[in-house]
Length: 230
Image (cartoon, rainbow, N blue to C red; front, side, top):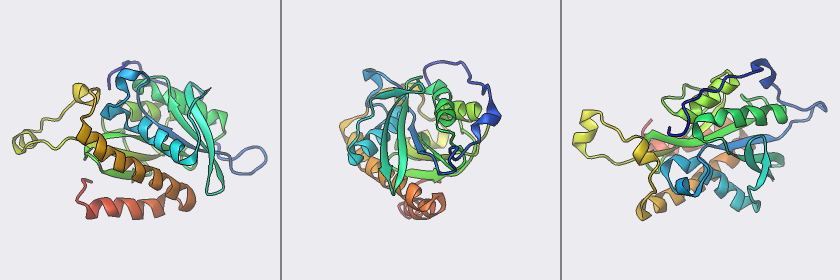
């Protein structure tokens, strides 16, 4: 949203469809959270993806500190599968460069072996939604990933950061933008986000254990029952 207007073009789009290593065994499952590096962005809504990766890492007893494929990474095992947690160091608008590099490095199939976690203004603050495919819907990081992979067929978990606007603002169609996304959250917002990060970590494990359909059935239904936006 706020870093570079450059677009990322895939240099070898057909090479990004892998899925298993040369041994035929499944390779690592990649979980990538989008955000901006730097202390000034640490507690901003736009860094919800980074926060989700840190929460998963904390719960799995690892630290995201290795540098690989233009990202900081950590490796753990979830449900018996090797999982690579990653936070791109490219800034949000160029996230696809790191995601594509990780996909190539681990010979992953983006449609089966990749989960991308990021913030979503169009979802109510504190909600989440899992989708198997779709357009970036105005999110520059998601747009970069789609461009670099040359495909919309990649799993995403979107964390709602949309503020509770007054009725007149909703009626006018106005929505917050760059300033809101890149401003530190208030104490009350951080408390709400803390709970949704735990749910995002649980949803990620469910995806790895049982697949996207089971996770969507469980977590998207829970969000609907809680009156979260579609």
